Length: 425
Image (cartoon, rainbow, N blue to C red; front, side):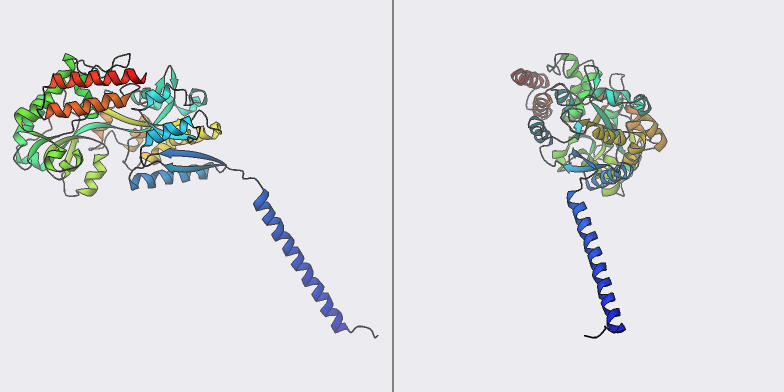
């Protein structure tokens, strides 16, 4: 056998080199796959739940959560929308220890959950630099129970008077009413002119409670029992009944074939309506030709009054990653996160500094809502809101329609509400 030629030697060397390259490549591929399958994830996942808002709200929240994740690379947020029966679903999951780490909680539902030892008190997480004093006190107090803070309010809305500028001009009215007597007179002047009726009425407790308070009435007492049928409280409700039945200058949504107070105002069925901040984007988008303005609700019995609705982020007491859950809550309710969330005007900031920075106290449409937060009545009616709200709403509409006297209807509602509360305690 002869010696291999130089040409064959070169071929063999090239072949061996290629084998080595392939072997190295296969090693790195296998190592990389091993890393992907066996290496633990370094990010902690926090589950956040809320109810489904409109598409604008959903898009805005997702953007804020992406910003949070970018600044907190070791925390991932899994956002879940509970679109139906929110509180029922949440209560079931809390009992079964399957609830999210962080979730929305409406002020109306807060007293019950805060009393059930299912929420994590937040006081020990709140550092001085978080600036708790920056929150509107009226809003923060809705999430305090037995001297502990269980939630931080993410946004709010009060109620204000919306009025049709063209209708006012037609009736020779130059300024919004400042007292309820003026509103009633305005309503009579506006009825049958440019609009069919002067005022749109929403006869739910959520829109009537401040009228009960204006004369010294209460919705519930310190024991949590319903007290809205008191003689003083009935005076506020009688204003609504008189205007609807005697003046015939006010109307409710079903009377004019609409689904909300905002819609009957937008469709020019009424010249005035009392609504929340949420009506501003709805009206501007749905009825772009409508010329309207807002004002604080006219004083009743020489007292300013309105309602305030707010929602907080709260932490599940069973959350496994509480430090990370707090990071999420503190970002969403901190100055930077809140400015991003409320910067479009879709919601109002609960921090005074953010509201000032965004100029909402000077905004022609939003300033009445900001002005009302200090004297507003929080939408909160004890531990068993369902019994209070459902019985009031069912009976008050009956009185408004003239099916029974107001006092009889309210006493019936109050007695039934207290009967149901006793059964639940």
